[in-house]
Image 1 (cartoon, helix red, strand yellow):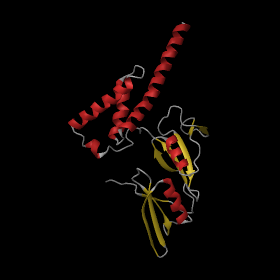
Image 2: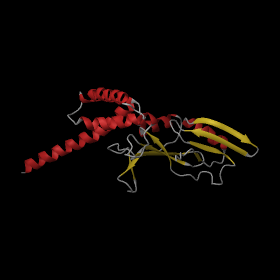
Image 3: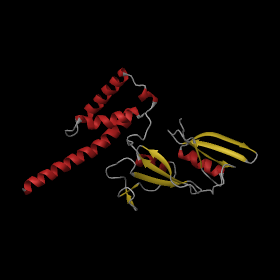
Image 4: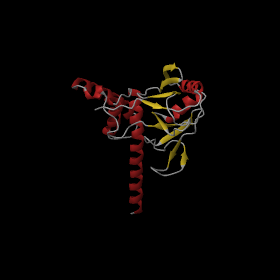
Amino acid sequence: MEMKLEVVVVPVSDVDRAKAFYEKLGFRLDIDFSKDDFRVVQFTPPGSQASIHIGTGLTSAAAGSLRNLYLVVFDVEEARADLVGRGVDVSEVYHYAGLGVPGRLSGADPERQSYASFASFSDPDGNIWLLQEIQARLPGRVQPSPSAQAMDVAALAELLRETGERHGQFEKTHAEHHWWDWYAPYLQARQNGGSPEEAVAVAESRMEVVLTKANEARNDGATASAGA
């Protein structure tokens, strides 16, 4: 049985002020309904299948009491720049030294690993939102899209042709590498609904890590040989 998260209620003290803020963010206004002392305003973040509700008569939670509402973005620096351009006060991009390690470090994760780079902002009541960069999800974290589940041989062949063409463009300007290290993230991104451009970015991000590690291994080997 499917269970889909549909709505999160965000407690606010001034509905009109909060409405103006979320409109400024670029959230889609779905409904603004009121009757007597009850009012519900629904917003949906761009690209999201879940929405938020603000209003009156919705919750007994204190205004501003929500913490760390995650907004997943493909590029945290680009998303931050967009919000700053809309007049939103957003923190600098930051990361952590490791999983569970306290203390923020300035800038995005050096290897641009998914799940590792953040920025944060608050709404007028103090409800805290986090931008989290995810370019490639861990295996099993995403249900295959209906199109991916129903992909026939002809569609798969076309996707492989597209992947080969995109990889060919990458291969001309980069160091020697295994083609499967590029194909895998590209195919996964496309089957999860990403555009060709987004899939290229995912594959190139992955290859930066692969090529860097390969170069470090070669340097370590050369150093060891020289020492011998």
